[in-house]
Length: 364
Image 1 (cartoon, rainbow, N blue to C red):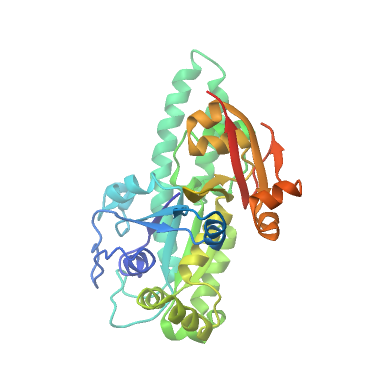
Image 2 (tube, rainbow, N blue to C red; image 1 turned 90 degrees about the horizontal axis):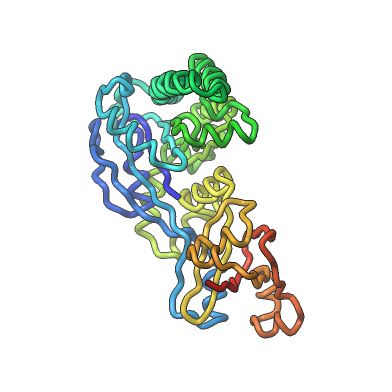
């Protein structure tokens, strides 16, 4: 999974990226500190892996990973090449979801590219550039399919669909707010629209306001209202707090979060939100060599899940031996679970569930 962290210059984007990836990207109080996208890989926290690794005496643990991409700051006119717009738009087309950092704090010592704090204006600035870029792409797709329709009338359906999308974009609404049937959804996946990507608004607050309670921040309330209309998620966060957490031990981190009334760090909450937003789950393979988490889309069937490990597993799929994590832990070992008949033999139609511990049988 690849997530793009975007936002106007000086909203705390690179500070947040540095904190959650500990990658040490430059962070400074001036626009365009980030010119090329910085990339950081983060392990998805999953305590189930530690427990299974201990049970099976695994030599190593391999968690699922998320790739975060810190993408260059955006300004008005980016879709026309202003600032670092073309570079920004090219990079963002490659991500699975967008983490849009919005400044929800006052600080006279940190300049704002537009001279004042207004998260809705900032959101509109970036969103409009995404819409304008998509309008250009949709126009090209309409022209292409209209030409193809001269030889094959089936392309007229795509022209009509794209015209609907264009109307939505012209109304300054994201393509993600539209509803498509199964066939239309399949077609739209061939059109890499920026506004079709899932969005999480990371509302970046000051340390004082974040510690006092997020519900008292009027900027956050405004962001939530706007996000609801866009079918987007909102994650209150404090980039400075996340930065401080990276310097603490696990024990100190836990105490620090408890003082703030939090059960999880911003990174853990962000990962959880992304999994929900992208409809993802994790299944696990565990043995003496390694215990490993594999990420798939909810609804994935056993052969396709096997294919995440190796194409041969999918091609020669015979069956999957499956037990839920909770059942396995209650038994204490695979041998005990097998004795109790809790390890199921599942075929090609089995839909993998979150926390399934799986052994694939295949033959090629």
